[in-house]
Image 1 (tube, rainbow over the protein chains, first blue to last red):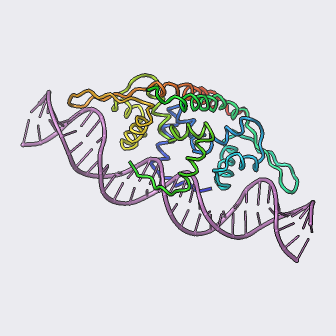
Image 2: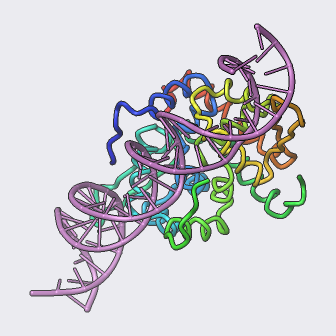
Image 3: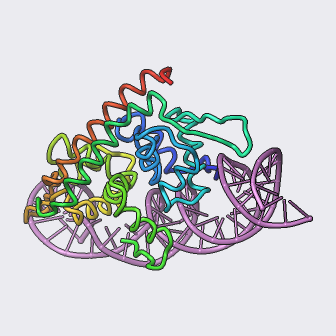
Length: 121
Length: 121
DNA sequence: ACAAGTACTTACCCTAAAGTATGTATATAT
DNA sequence: ATATATACATACTTTAGGGTAAGTACTTGT
């Protein structure tokens, strides 16, 4: 899970800035490249780990669990594992994760509008 | 402006995924750490380069112009330079940049809700 | 006995992003 | 003559993130 060096200017700056700016705070939580994508795929309902893998073919397994763990640690998603073999694990949005849906929706809306009409400058 | 190596798996994956997933498309444009923050500060009105610098103390000058240039190239912001000395340059949101305001607003809203009430799981 | 499926984990390496530090142009103020 | 302010540019280094490849556990199917 890649340790973070303590005395790093970036980290200090980020922590400082996070307290000041709401958008910075959000970027702390979902700022990674894959996180909004994962949340987007969970927005349509609970998904098994393997379903997410298929839904996001570009992500590697390492990245997928890594970000799932981080999202879980930040309490944006909830992991549910059935005690069976082979494993059956589902992920779903927590209530604060659901609070992010307006963000995700707004992104999707903008993507559609912006993609078809780049002439608007 | 840091050249990008062509034959990189990440880049290929990203381009592929960008065509499929709207959120991925958005992350291509504003996925950097600083970009949403810059857009947030421009959302309250036009700002000079030096004003942005003061508004976002954690950002280095290199990062600031680098992202401003990228945002300009993606036509999300507009640069206006008065031909005076010392230079007077203002940045403002383009119309498609303004289209991102719902995203930024949703982020800010979530940040306030989430920060004061982490108990909601 | 062996392969297959699921949900991971771990070690090692490479790249893109970010930081540090310094330099540039030009006019006004002292 | 020198300093100051603005809006950058650029070389050089570090770091966090991401990729590759392999392995684990445990059961069912053949």
